[in-house]
Amino acid sequence: MRAVRIHSPGPPEVLVYEDAPTPSPRPGEVLVRVAACGVNRLDAWVRGGRYKSALPRIVGTDIAGEVAEVGPGVLRFHPGQKVVVYPSLSDGTCRYCLEGHPNRCLAGGLIGAVADGGYADYVAVPATNLVDAGRIDLKAAAATPVNFGTAWSALMGAGVSPGKGVLVWAAASGVGNAAVQVAKLMGATVIAVSGSKERADFAVSCGADHSIIRSKENVPIRTKELTGGQGVDFVFDPIGGETWATGIESLARGGRLISLGLTSGATSAVDVGRLYRNELGILGVFGYTKQDLVRVLSLVADGKLKPRTRELPLKSAKEAHEALESNSVEGKILLIP
Ligand SMILES: [Zn+2]
Image (cartoon, rainbow, N blue to C red; front, side, top):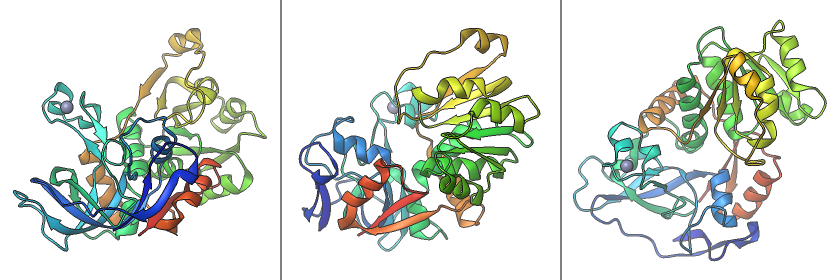
């Protein structure tokens, strides 16, 4: 089969489009013919060596396709069936798995990081990691898991409800525009923060009520102006150290900072006085459950959530990573084998 493999960590040039052995499904596994694979930060972290992985490795966690072949013992899936991959690998036996949170598994890992992923014609995955795609278009499905699953898990887990205010950092990014759409679906008022006028316009086209351009405006001051001096109830932050302090400053009393990623510094000074006097909370979110994935896939199928995508051929994985890392992508890049 054709695949994009990494033989040594490094810049986008280490993504090599080449022939690789087609995997055979082992007992309990399914061979999926990849229809589309979403491009995520995680792929770039594995490529760059920040996320350790055995090499060579085929990255790609956001996978949708058709069952090509089933391994021994697989009863629930059949060739030709359209499927989406839930990428969290878990042991099913630790305390967190038993509590319904395989994304917290002590022995956990991700397809596309600790096992080969979807930058290929085919990928073999455990049948327990598959979800029936149902009515959903496979390209829309491939743009859904990481972005919409994470946004759903984060905003549901934080308790977003109608009438609340949500500020979304990086609102034109894949996970950012997903958060804008999910928060609107939950009935919230959304303030989108982006880096440029074009990206702010994109966030508004995804449903944001207000937008702030972070390079030109003071985010906490502008947020207070837009919320009658109160601040927002939730801040959705996929950026990290660089934005924590201003996010906390933008919160109303009783507000929650939802931290779900790290594209800037890993540490931040927190104003502890503001934290306790204003009864603020900080919630970390890592991944999502299979139930979250099933829920967002059905909302995409119903047209209530709309992944915004740009397609590139699989052989252009290098260009896809360059675009992702220059923050020039609006929505999600899909690689099409
Ligand atoms: Zn576990």
